[in-house]
Image (spheres, rainbow, N blue to C red):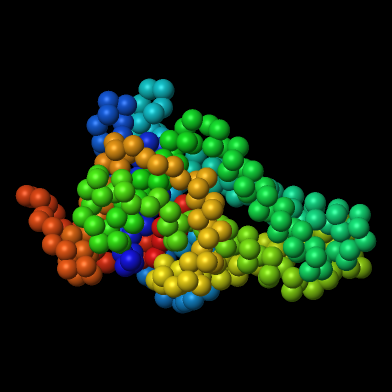
Length: 336
């Protein structure tokens, strides 16, 4: 297996693939044809190199992947709206406004579900059993609740038909990248027999964040003497401040996992693979075609196969060579 450096994300009835600053969003619209938008997104790391340092770049990539991911989801959703098309200026204003509100709401909901609620429940249990609040046992209990809430959240949303289809497109995205990285030409047949699990998936990143948070939170000093509510809020605030640190550590491990295939890395990647059983599904051939379409727009996989596997595949007539090098995103997708 060779790391291609390409990443992506499932969207509504489609797949986004990203390579360096270029990304393509392919969508299967209601008339069953495929439409594709190719755009560029330049990372702030290009201007401020220090943001690309280890343990700092993880948080930056996470935020930027959320921005690109929200944009691509908004693009794909436009093909399935029932309302009349908006004017270009109105559409641009509304999409930007909706994007901002959506990101703020999603962030607030994530803070409540995966930080505030687990901390509150763990401290209740610690009080009930006479355990020290903010101790190592509390960190483990809090981590258990975070993982439990995350798993239950995924299980519940998979009951929705639209989410099931999105997870099928997620599978198509993984299988397409696995196909390339295992030295096979990018065809529907080869993609179909490739694995839908990938070590660099964003689902794995979330699991790493939850597990690493348990270890980091064990070293938070105990806070007392300010009143129960103030103590609780101070502990909560420290957890928020530690998020970039935890994200940075998780991102570095994800990079290592993507570049290595030894027994230790494979063992540590198993929790992520278990979660991917929920967040990916086997795609249909028409979904695979959509994923392949996005790859073709941003990545020269034929050159990659020739250089890394000595496999030569002819270019189609009139094919335009995209930039094949660069980093990828960190959404619910494989990343570099």
